Image 1 (cartoon, rainbow, N blue to C red):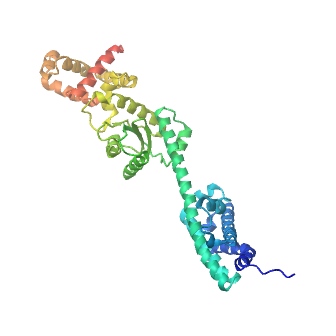
Image 2 (spheres, rainbow, N blue to C red; image 1 turned 90 degrees about the vertical axis):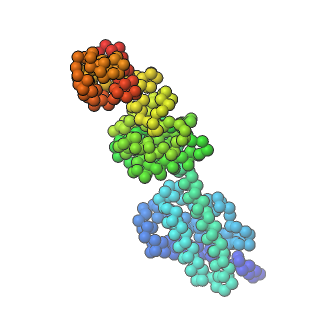
Image 3 (tube, helix red, strand yellow; image 1 turned 45 degrees about the horizontal axis):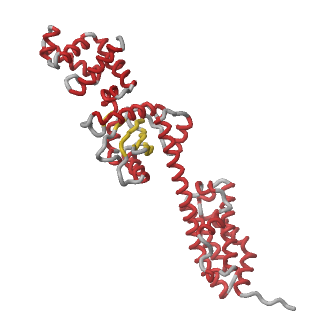
Length: 395
């Protein structure tokens, strides 16, 4: 008995199946001619792109054979993405941009649509053209989903990696791994780095805070890595030649009613642990200075850090302040006479048997030597502690 003729859709689908290879080949050839970036890919990546094109054409033929537009959408976005893009490795999403993928899909659809008239004719061709438009829309949505998921996964991974880098700096665990991780996050290793610590503002998400901080940092040509630890927001800044200016520029990301502490500038990321240690110590004791400026440098909180048990602050006052005064001879005696004489220049002059202007000159010299002005309340406090600690140390 003669075979019954195939239904129109089945007949068209059968001819499309036989032409699927030629359609895929034509689409790939079109990419080489019209997409400059395609020829710049490695042979392996070009091969994977060809696999995607073949999967897309084959999936369209099978979808059309199964009923096409009359059955609703071809597949869910996830299912279609798995069918078309599932053969290629995930790494390909990092090689081909979303715009390039859109160009690839558009060109493939155009080539297939232009080739349909060579395979089909009449109503069959019209039906397939209509189906291609529907299918192209679904592939476009599936493409967007693939890249959205890749971006989401990359964003989540970057956030975890960023938290690990900042945490390693805070725990003084800097090594080659840390530097490599920071580089992967865009850290440009351009010299000085510092750590800024403040309170997390209420009603703002971490993603919003971090994006705001990075935007402000970029405006000053700074690198920024961010992390939230409890109620603290920690910023690791690269390229911070002026720590106070960097901290001032980033004040808006911190809670407006709380202090912000800036650690000292260090040579590079490998030394950032020292800035972090100093900033953390200063942040713990900053409530002891209610009128502290905002931001406040950690070195401006030396008295509070000493009273809070910070051994590094104690050594700083002894080695950088007391010993500098001790080497100058008369500066140490002048400071002692000034502080013990109720901070009166005239009383110090009488004690030292010198003119009052001589005392004034020596006090200015003390400020130059130590960075602390004995005529101001906080400068006098830091120098008084330096005298006490230096004597206790047996110098």
